[in-house]
Image (cartoon, rainbow, N blue to C red; front, side, top):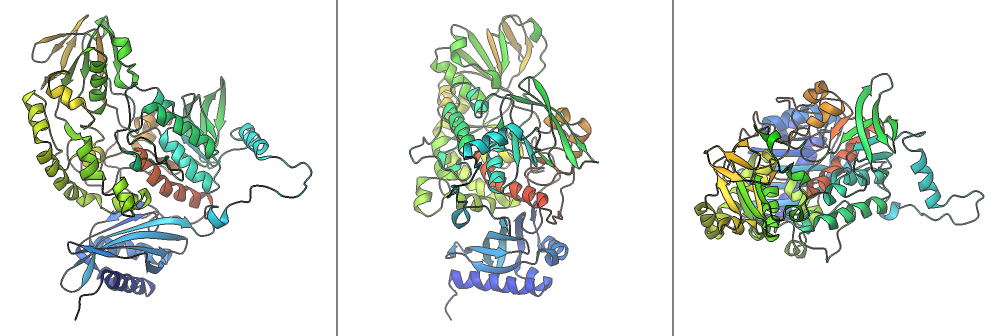
Length: 602
């Protein structure tokens, strides 16, 4: 007997699973999963973003959700493939309310192929599909109609009334990449949405940073929903170019965007079943009353500025990295940069290029991932020209990325960084010789796991590491600043550094600090800590959560949502947040399974 082809094996599993679910035979369905198995669901089964990490958890989820979800029509989508004993297969399926897409990985356990990982994602809600392709609107009204308004007139009327005499269904606080991506998704679903942003123009959150800032992620990883970057867009886009793209995108996608608008406070009106969001716009106070409120203020909270004795005595300029003006303001001065992650390296490199005397103070170890090696080893298979040639665009890349459960993701990354250590041994050796403290994460899993677990502790090396290694950027490591003097800083080893400018590249606080000020400390603590996996590694306390805390899914505060992340996450997860919001606004039943408990507050 010949071995089954990947297609035969995958379709046999899907058909057996489809049949078991149709019969409501949960035992038969669970028997199709391996002893080690993971089912990650993005909204379609659970109205949540959660992962079932064992056969028992799969059983419990199906017992709770199967009758309501009523899944059907599991079909192979394209050809399956087998590599190193793992069969991968794309598939489509339906539920009572939605259509979905997923990715299955099968392992042979002797008694046949069993599911190792299963990803299910909601693609669209039945009856509420985006008006695209064959469903697109005509646009022009042919014929003769008295009082007909042009598109421009209708847009002007909407701009004049929305937020005043007409209330939006959703208010998004934060008009950076996250708010803009979500606004585009909601607009395509016909959801009335208003984005409020304190900066004057869309893209200013990028324009206003230090002038050397550029994306450290490659272009293929960073597209916004619906509208790809042009095919000559730089691999690593400069900040001002990104800012202009975001501003143009808001216009092209016809987003309702209030710039120069400051959100002052929010509270939920139980009687009206709406939020009251007080903002200052054009010198006037406006109260918005949406049904759903989304906080999209980035990955982090307020800037962390350490309280160091003597700071008030400093005669020079001191500022957080988020306020750094660049090297032009530092000419002829001695600059001390406290910190050793992305911003610290970028700022130090730009200062050195500008001929400025700069010293980096490294308090704790940092993971260094050289950009070229990172692009090839970690991202190239999913986000690159080579990936495109292999048929993997960013849509498929996003789903492949999402299909790896967080519980085992580190095991996928450890070999990547072992190879990076080997390839970059010379650079790493010279950095350590210069005194730089290196690490590869608590378990050797490198950059992306650090990003997910704590959102800090790394630098994607685009050139500054060589300057540290050869001494061009001066380095003081294994020390902190103990005291700030009028024209110097005293380090914890007792030595003193002259300083005319002090830059705090010390990161940012928890994202839900925004909630404490915008709504209340009680609500912030009810939501709990934002970001992190509960990996019980530095700055990511346990217990294990299985997903990023409070991101893109229901929080413990009804009608309050958190959205953010890098450009990739803002693009990908805005799809699932927009579908959750649309379903609620459409009055569809959305019972949330496995709502995350709060283990940590701010």
